[in-house]
Each structure stands twice: as C-alpha cells, then as structure tokens.
Image 1 (spheres, one colour):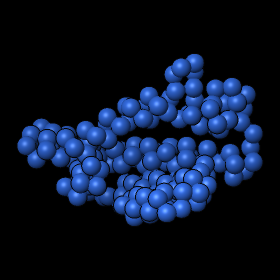
Image 2: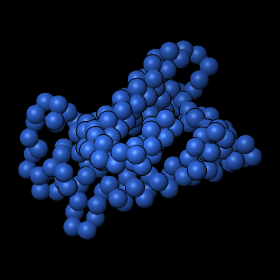
Image 3: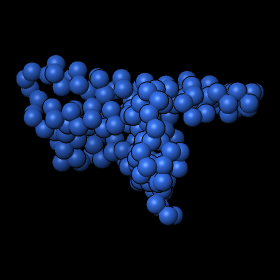
Image 4: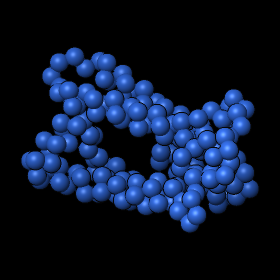
Length: 166
C-alpha cells in the first residue's frame, strides 16, 4: 500500500495527465490492484479457515469466513461484479439509482443520500480510524477487549500500521 501511495504521489506531481487518465481512472491501474488485493485477502482468509484444525474456537473460524465474505464483497464491488468484464448492461434499478450506472451498491444514490459518501466514506472511515488508532491501545490495556478480539480473529494493527495510516 505504501508503494502505491508513494507511486501515486510521485505521478500526481510529475505527470498529472497520466495520474488522472491511467492511475486513478475508473477501472484503471489503482482500482485493478485494489480489486486484486481484496480478492487475495479473501482467499487467504478462506485458506486459513480450512487450514485451522484444532486450538481455535468456532467463533474464530467463522470470523475468518465472515472476513473472507467481506473482502470478496469489496472485490466484487471494485469490479462492478464483472459487469464490464462480461459486457453486461446494468438493470433498470441501477441505471436509475447508481451514479455510474454500475451493478454496485457503493455508488447508489437516493435523492441526497449517497451510499458511498455516508456508509463507505464516513462510517467505514470512523471504523477504520478506531481500528487503527484506538484498538491497539485497548487491546494491550483491557483484558476483556483482548479476549473479544482474539475470539473473533480480528488482527490487531501494529505501530507501523498506525504510522502508515496517519
């Protein structure tokens, strides 16, 4: 991720046309790699689910399945569920309510309510901020939080992750 950010910062400054026309464009370099990363994380979670035999609770194992599903959902949304790959026209609902005429949930707009801005921007932004900035501290200081996090297979960010987030 750090390489992608630094790469983007460099080209935003040195070649803004390439940055806007190739790197950040819809279905461009950045979005394709983001989709690949999301798919890989989903596969890793599935692989861990099937690899774990003993020593972990059912909640831990099923949390891995939930994470696999969550990251696969992100992958599907990034590639518009294969809409452009398979040349599929968006159904009427998505043509009417989707800001990009995609078969995606994150681009839906109902009046002034934009799903991407509220749910995938504000709410997920708050969750990620708490996860990266507050959870590591709570995990180290409150036994109940540590137990809960361990039970649900939630990876705890290390200091380096917090630094990159900031």
